[in-house]
Length: 444
Image 1 (cartoon, rainbow, N blue to C red):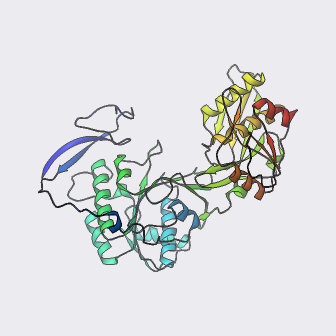
Image 2 (cartoon, rainbow, N blue to C red):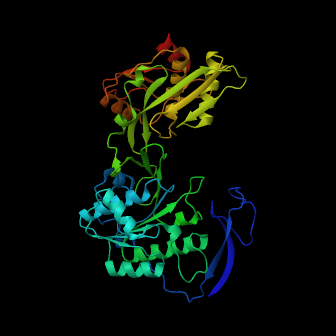
Image 3 (spheres, rainbow, N blue to C red):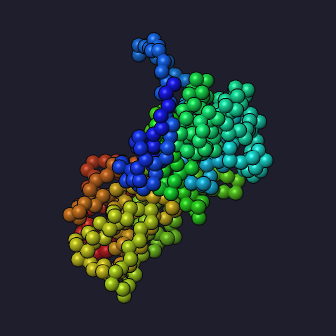
C-alpha cells in the first residue's frame, strides 16, 4: 500500500499536492488542510455485470417515520440503505430533530442505534425526557472510534443508525485529529460502506461553517445519497429542513418546523403560519403565493419607506436577495419617475424565510409603492409575477397552484401577469402587462 499526502480545500474540496494560501477554485484564503491518501495495490477482480431485468430496482417499501414534513423532504420516507448527511449550525436543532425521528421510527417497530460523540448518555437522557421520548427500540452509544461503532452496529442490528456528529468521530489507524479532512472523508466512507452492506439507513450529522456549508471537504457530500440542511435564525422559532441532494427523491424540497419547548413541531399549514390578516390591512404589506419545491404557501412581503436627510439613503432587505431588491427600486425610479434619493427603504419577508422565487418581484414592487403612497392594498388581494428591466410583468410557473392556495385562504383578487386560459378557482384576476398598469390599478 502506497501513501502520499495531499492538501484539500475545506470549502470546495479542491486537491493540490502542495499547500496554497488561496484556493484557485473558490478563492478563499487559508482553507487547505493536509490529508493522507492511501493507494492500494491489488490484483484486478472479476467485475459484476447484470442486465436491467435482473436489477432489483426500488421494489423495497420506504420506511415511514410518521413525521410528514421529514418524510416529504426524504422523498416519501427512508429507503433502506440510504445514507443521508444533515448539516446545520450548532444549536439549530439537528440532534433534537434526529431524536424525534428515532422515537417515531421506534414506535413503528424499527430498531435504531443513536451514536453520540458530542453528548454523554446522561445528557442525551435529559434531552430525550424533555421532548417526551418513549422509544423502547432505540439504543444509545457514546463511542467515537469507528471500530467500536461497527461492533455496536453488529450487536444491535438496527435498521437505522444515527451518527452525531461526524466532526467527533475518528479511525484509530489515521494519525490525525477528529474533524480534519482525512478523518472526515475516511470515517464517512467506512461507515457508509459498512451500513450499505447491511442495508442500514444512516444519518450523519455535521456542523456548517460560517459560510453556511458543511464543515470539511466538499467531497463528503458526494459520498452520501442525500444531503439535507436545517436552517433558521436562533432568535426565531422557525426551522426549515431543505433537501440539496437526493438520489431517491426530489431536490429543493422543504419541511417546515417550529421550535417549541417539547422539540420541533411540524407546521402543516404554512400559509396560516406566515400570513397575518391584521398586518395586511396596513400600508406596505402584500400577500403572495410562494412555491418552494413541490408545495405552495402564502407569504407576506412588508416594506417601509422613510425620509432621510443624509446623502446616502439606506437599503435593507431581509428574506429576499439584496441585488434583486435594488433592481426593483431602480425600476421604480426609472419607469415611474419617483425619486428615492431621500428615502430609506426597508424590505422584509415576514416569518424568517428566504425567498428565491422570481414571483416575489411584483409583491415587493407593490409593497414599496404602498408604503411610499401610504395606501393599503387590502387583505383580500394577492399578487405574483416577475418584473423585467423594461418594466414588463412576466409570467411565472405554477400559476394555477398559486391561485388555488390563495382561494383556500379566502383571497378574492389576484394581481397577475397575463396568464391566458387557466383555471381561475373563482378568484377575480387583474392582469397587468407592465408596472404602470399595476400602479394605475391599485393606486389610481
